Amino acid sequence: MADGRVRVISDSEAEVAASEGDRVYRVFLDLDGGLADSDDNGTRFRNYVGYPIIAFMMVKGLIPYVPKIGDLLKGVRWRSLNERYKSYRVVESHIKEMLAGKGVEPVEVDRFIDEAYRRLAGIELRKPL
Image (cartoon, rainbow, N blue to C red; front, side, top):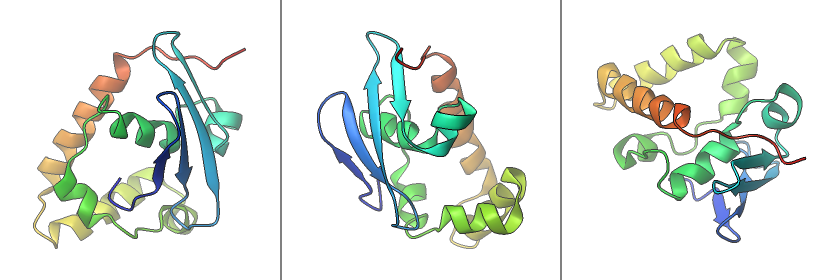
């Protein structure tokens, strides 16, 4: 959201640009039908709710968004970090250190993550047939 990478097309569709700027993912979300899909690799091939769906859910207010944290994450090249460290936990630690250096305590980041997970857990989604 802070990077302006989510372009809402309709109430159920969006386009989300990748952090490297080299890809744009199509997202479909229909909460009434319990449906979600995206053409990102995580959603398509690993069957989890990938970040494009989560970003669209944040724009729609379904998952919390903390502008203070989001603004500090502008320009982070997530794919490069993931490829470099090959571990979500290591990337998360790296990001928390960076945010701490900018005045956001790790406990504040953890609260945000926990609330996002809590909200996600309360939303049942499946891929359209």
